[in-house]
Image (spheres, rainbow, N blue to C red):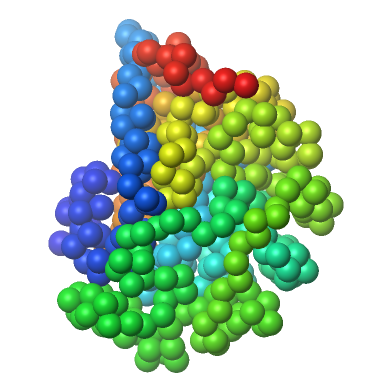
Length: 391
């Protein structure tokens, strides 16, 4: 049965992915940090926002089109950077990038991608964005920036919410690390999922070895089948680095991981073109607020001077509309397409996007709108004071 017949929403895609993946891989994607509360809070915060429909409006013709950084696209979505797709499915990064291109939306490639910039550029034809962290060796980071630029990346996304490696206790318990280092717990875990083991790991081994960080400089192990190495994120990143990136990068620059309006104001003052309001999908700091609670105040602080993206907790098309009603220009999708990819490769990722597109379209009709520009905060009930971050 085709994946569309097995999953009628993102939750059902999630269940299919859970059944197929080994525990360690699943928890690396799905679990958070410390007490693992924030992921659920992200989802619950979006669910707690109600939208008030307007009746007796002609909604026979609807469009969810938006313009992001000068490019018109049919949906207000961007694939968020997710660095584990090649463990969801054989060549999963390319699968999601291809699904994004077919849907007409950008794909964001990660610093820790196991697919080369050149290979993703061939398939991410609706927008090739590049996400990065900065390392203590800034000269190595600039090499990655230059390589992304040379391969035609449209937008550079600097993630700033991970100054140190998070306390992902679930990963340590499962024997999972990034990069993967073989151990008895992992091997036993993998053997319990023989279809995944043969279809993913087996195919990589037949082709020459496990995927590694394809775009790292050779000095830190950049070859796909080269030595296992990862350089640590830098805890010293500050606004001077944003200025340096702004100087080096001629395209659009987005800062991802902001939750405070003052940081958003400063980012705009430093020449940033876009801000992604995000708590890293709940995977970094369990005591952070749900990202949707920070969105309105950041939109107000930016006051139209930069594009505002939203990320963290989106599971339904209506969640996308809630973020847009609060002022976001578009929404970044991470786990939804990972679930789809894990369940069925490119077909599954494409199905995830199709489900969200259908839900967005139906929600627009139910709300009585024909264009996303008609949404504002009056559609939300209640717009609570607790949603504002005080400065």
